[in-house]
Image (tube, rainbow, N blue to C red; front, side, top):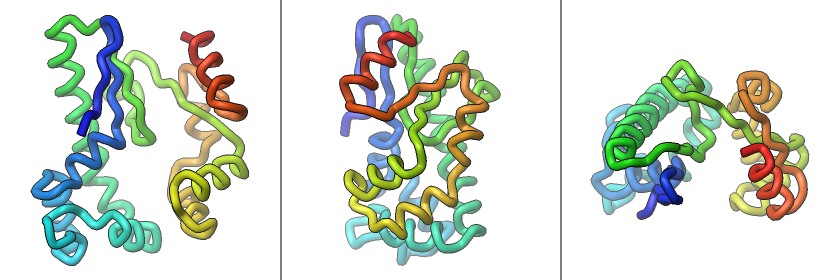
Amino acid sequence: LEFRRVLFRSVVYDTDALIRAAYGPGGELSRLIAEAFGPQVLREDGSADRAKIAAIVFSDPKALETINSIIHPWVRDRWHELLEADAANGAQVGVIEGALYVGKSAGFDQLWVTFVDRATALDRAVQRGGLTREQAEARMAAQLDPAEHAARADVVVDTSGTRDEVRQRVRDLW
């Protein structure tokens, strides 16, 4: 599973793909989450059952805290390991693409946040994420408010409109 792309002297990391790989059979996150929630959150092949995990954590605030205390530090550590390795190989810019972040306090130079109105975000979660409207609303309710994200950002990218429009906005901001 590819979780990074090298573009010129920069590297782009796909956090979702990185997590998916670690949720795979024998993956480190599969093991850590099974230790916290029990073996019932694993499939027969040893991979994490994301649907079961989501049902648990998005219905119980304590469970959400628990999983966040596992995933967030793990992701942050992987980001730094990857950035350091690629910098040693000549990469000058590292871009981390993902919903989880810890901001500049984790040693990053800038935080860019994408932003779209709540109604559009819900529609996209239902259309692209295969979620029911209720599931999408529960996930959004468990996440940091988009306005709070934007307030922490160095750069805010408006993602309303078409993909081509958003790509052009990013190019302009870059």
